[in-house]
Image 1 (tube, rainbow, N blue to C red):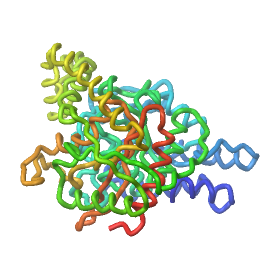
Image 2 (tube, one colour; image 1 turned 60 degrees about the vertical axis):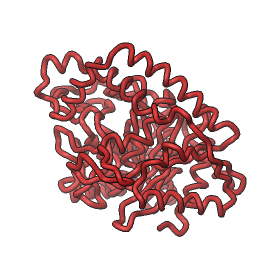
Image 3 (cartoon, rainbow, N blue to C red; image 1 turned 90 degrees about the vertical axis):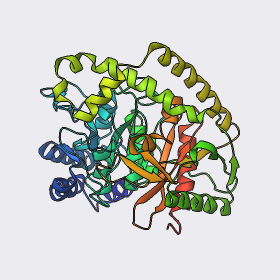
Image 4 (cartoon, rainbow, N blue to C red; image 1 turned 120 degrees about the horizontal axis):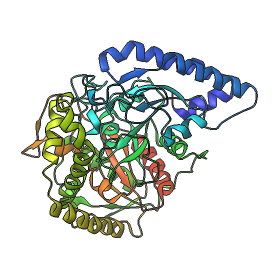
Length: 445
C-alpha cells in the first residue's frame, strides 16, 4: 500500500492507523530476522502513536497526508528517548534527548515511527555490510546487497515493514539503495531539509530525504520533513518535456542490462514526446576525486577523537577508511573545493532551458554481499567506487536528484534512472519525475 492510498482508505474509514501499523509490525516480526533491516523496533510506542492518530481523526483533527502513516528512520537521526547508534559500537550508551528537527516535523505531521533502521556504519559505505548489527540483505535476493548506506531503510519499504522511510545521502546513500531495491529515492537540494540532529558523515555533502514506493509518496515525506503540509503536485505533460543527457562519463561504464533498461526508458520517453538532448559536463570525471577529498577529510575531523580513544569499536573496513582519510592533504582539500565550484557551474549550464538531466542511478545491479570487485564493460572495477560513480557528482554540486525504477534485469534485479533538477526547483523536478514514472511503469521490462 502506498502512502497516498493509505490516506484515502484511512479517511474513507476502510482502514485505521492502528491496523496499518500492526501490519507493518507483523511484517517486521516475520522478515527482520532474515533481512536485518531494523536495529530497534518500537512496537509499543508505535501502536500508541497509531491509536492516538485514530482518536484525533475521529474527533476531526487531521494533520495532513502523513497522519497515521507508519514510517521508519535511519539510525543516524535522533528520535527522542531512543539510542542513535549509527550502526556502531562507538556510540554505545547514547540516547537522544530530543528529536532531530526533521523528525520533529514528521511527528507533528502525525507520522507513526515503527523503528530505527540498520545502515553501513556511520554511513561510510555503499553496501550496508559493515555494521555492528550485521549486514542488511536485499529482499529480492538475500545473497545481495540492498545498497547503502540507507540499506535498512530501503528494505523496510520494499517489504512493507513501513510505508515510507527517511535516509541520509552523502554520496548516494538514498538513491543507491532505492535503485538496488526498486524504490524511489529523493535527495533534496543541499540544505533544503535540516541535517541537525543527524550523525554526520560529511557536513559539506550530507542530505536528508525520503525513500518510498512512488514519486508522490516521496514528495509527501519530503515536504513533511520540512514541516510543511504538502499538496500533491500535478505531473507535467510528457509531450514537450526537455531532458539533458550527459552521456560522456555517465554512460561510459555500465552493465549491459543496466544500459539496455536505461536506453529502453529513454526510447519510451521519446515516443511520448520528450526531447532528450545530448549535453556535456566537462569535469564530471573529476567528481569522484572532489567528493572523496572533501568527504573523507570531513569524516576524519568528526571521528578524530574516537579513532584515538576507541579504534577497536569500529568495524575493520570503516576504521581503515577513516584512518586513510586522515592523510588528505590541505592543498588537495583546497583544490577539491575549487573543483566543486567548477562542477556546480557546469551542471547549472547543462540544466539551462531543460526540465532535468537524466542519467542512470547505479551502473550495476545490486552486487553480492562480500563482493569487492565486479566485471563491467570488460573491466574489473571496485564495487564501492562503481556504486558511487553516478550519484556522488550531485552531492558535490548540491542539486536535487531523484532515483526511480526503470525496469529489471533477466535475474529480476531492479534498474534505475536519475533525474537531476535545477536549483530552487525541487517541486518542478518532482512534477517531471511523476510524468517519467508513469512512462517507465508502462510496459516495464
